[in-house]
Image (cartoon, rainbow, N blue to C red):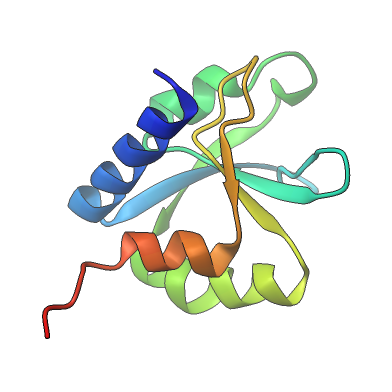
Length: 113
């Protein structure tokens, strides 16, 4: 899947399952650094997160985060720390990178007027 298709799939899965997955180890949550940005990678399932955890990351464990916890704690915390979200990265493809609030807004159901 292309990064955009993975992004759409991720949103669909998180809305349906009300959870998303991160990787963590004894030092905390896995973070990636791109050219000038620090990101926390997120996945739609435990399997997808675990599949990504290779080589330097092989000791990491998948951790489920409820959508409520993500929106109430992670989003503001990441924004305060100037972190971005790497949505459903693959081993050889970082995927779509967005701000925590942009990701959060996409996860929230559209409100009708």
